[in-house]
Length: 185
Image (tube, rainbow, N blue to C red; front, side, top):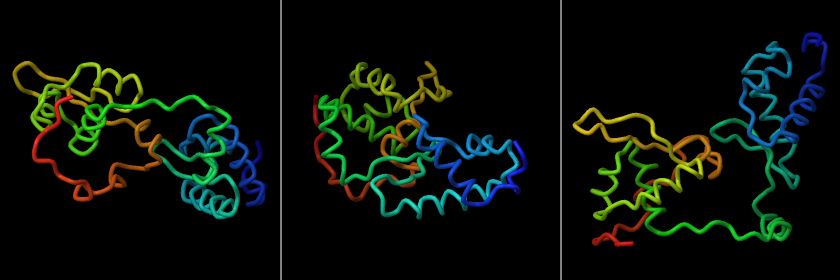
C-alpha cells in the first residue's frame, strides 16, 4: 500500500469506518494502524477517530471507545426496536452473583475469601464459574499466603460489555445504598 501521505484525510477516515463497521470485535489502535502498514501515527489516528465519532454524532450508530478498542454500536434509543429482531431473553443474574461481580470490580484483585468476608456468606462456586465463562472475570494471580488462593479481577470483556474504557468509569460506590445485613442467597 502506498504511503498514507498519498491519501486524503477523508479517504483514511473511510478506511477506518469500513474496518470498524465490518469488525465483530472492538479494534485497538494497533489493529487500526495495521490498515496503513503502521505508517499512521497514533496521535493522528486518535484525532481521525474523534473526527469520525463527530461525523456520526447525528446518525443511528455511534462510534465509542471501550477497553479493548473502538467500535460502532447502535445508539441506546434504538435498543428496544433492535431487541425485537432477537427476542431471546437476556441472561438473568442472581443478586448474589451481581454482588460478587461488584465486589470483584470495585476491590480487585480479590480472593474468594475476600468476597465472602465482604458479603458475609459463602460464595457459590457456580457464581465464580458463570462469571468466568461469561468472560467478565479471570484469575490474575495468587495471593502470597498459605494456600495461595486465586486472585480474581475483571476483564476487558467486562468493560467492553458495559461500554467502559476503564474501571475509573464505574459509578462511585457512595451512589449505592449500604445494607446493614448481608443477604443470604
